[in-house]
Image 1: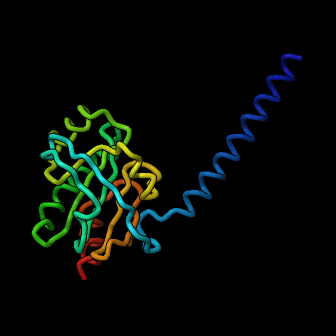
Image 2 (image 1 turned 135 degrees about the horizontal axis):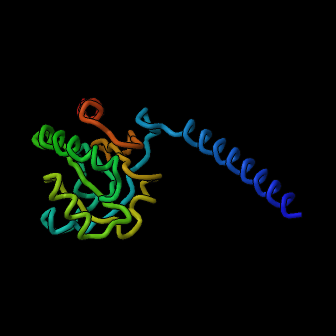
Length: 176
């Protein structure tokens, strides 16, 4: 009887793994890692900025009339480590052209998040996602970056780490 149960459990596990793999492939195939995203209004939000970012509050109103990059990240996220220097570099290149960058830490300890900001020399505003802003944006994971046009419309959603070349290309589209 024990051997039959083991074979059933093994069969169940194999079927479950196959179904999970199919669901993942379907989901991955339906997601857009950086292509055009159907335009939709950016949600209303308010973020209390970290002390490492100068403190204060950042709201959707701070984006009014300006193209923006909103990046969701976490200090415990290895791809976020790789992405951070690219975001800071491109922020430095585009900040004088009226582009706004905002980083939002997800499921992170405030001290760890602020240490991450200091470690990477990040100078654009950053704060924690204390009110599930990511859900309002439609965030599925970290890192994930949203590009917002001057009219406050999300025009691109990029899942996974974004590099400098991709950031520049997406920002040039926003600035046209």
